[in-house]
Length: 128
Image 1: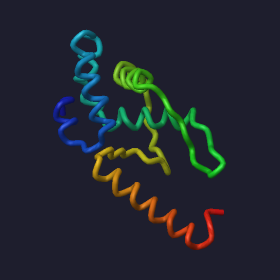
Image 2 (image 1 turned 180 degrees about the vertical axis):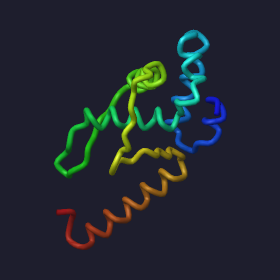
Image 3 (image 1 turned 135 degrees about the vertical axis):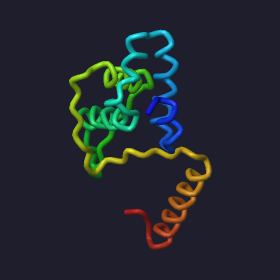
């Protein structure tokens, strides 16, 4: 399945953005364009590779969560590395959120839900 077909089949905004970047970058990088045609490489697996890379370098916060952040250039660089490097072996990610939905409607629902939880906690005697 080609890159455009893969982007059409995903609801994951991160995978879609990576696909758009790779598509644009392949216009100026012939080696990348050739690598993108490999049947053994997919955008979904590329995303899993990036998540694995972040998991390796993430730090654990006091509340037990793992966190990491990076600029777009770092993420896009990892995507290029995934497609150009034929020796990458994938392993499944456990207990990591790999879906991102940044739709404005969903974000408003989540914020409203968090406000309501905070309000209930305050009414019950505070947050701590």
